[in-house]
Image (cartoon, rainbow, N blue to C red; front, side):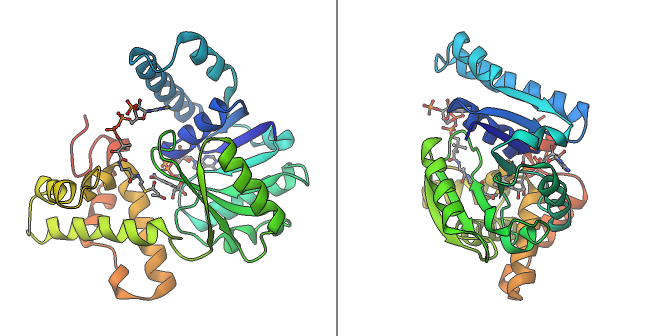
Length: 281
Ligand code: CAA
Ligand code: NAD
């Protein structure tokens, strides 16, 4: 594999692109308009400048990395890609329409991977004529730092596709764990309901937002409290995951907190909008 196209230059797409570029791959990031691409590029430069200032990267390595990354709105740039990693919004219909287009554009041997947090790989793959080459490659936020990649098999994913992606995850410095398709897979089935529970404790007045977070940091040794983590993940993403797990299982224990839904409706999505449970402005 040489060229990777990442669909979506948001929270995850930009970091996933950096992970591949860091390992020597040529990476194209595709998003929907120039303003979003410009915002994505400035976040990239700001992040790399921080690493340079910390002495963790020199200017030559930064230039090298940037030389392997490009940005586009043109999906046709996927035509010669060896791998697609899709990190657009957590919405089945959107993902299906993106992959239907990509299936027509990409070479027959190209592997199509989705970074979905919770949606059925089989359902997304049904939009393509190559479900055996379709797989979940699930990175964790922040993808430049977190070691895990869940490698998720859909009903038709071939052993070969699974082996290639598992090996690739190792080649880019990650630890792969193979997971069978299930709503939320492994980590999010446990972690997102935990965030949701933290939000409900705050909503029902059991403790302040800071109180819930401090309790989980100091009482359970979590690196961040559940509300701060919800803000990092994006509250829209958390809600989409809760709704998928709830719809697929029908189990009321996965019902989204009313406060989580209210925050999303109000556009308070966490770090990416500057405000969530905390103010980042
Ligand atoms: N490239 C390379 N390294 C980078 C980097 C980049 N672009 N950006 C940051 N780093 C490095 C930093 O330099 C730092 O290294 P040192 O510790 O050696 O200095 C390291 O990564 C950590 O960065 P920070 O110092 O900024 O952060 P921190 O030590 O305060 O840790 C954190 C931040 C990693 C986010 C930590 O708080 C944490 O682990 N939080 C929990 C995260 C988590 O649970 N994520 C999963 C969310 S769920 C999910 O993602 C799935 C889903 O589908 C929703
Ligand atoms: P985000 O909202 O930060 O970014 C999504 C990006 O996709 C936006 O820039 C948007 O403009 C772009 N987009 C929308 N339609 C597009 C299209 N047709 N073509 C190209 N780009 C398009 O979202 P995110 O947090 O980066 O999440 C992306 C995916 O990764 C979701 O499926 C999410 O569930 C999953 N995920 C998120 C996290 C997380 O912690 N945020 C972790 C792992 C997986």
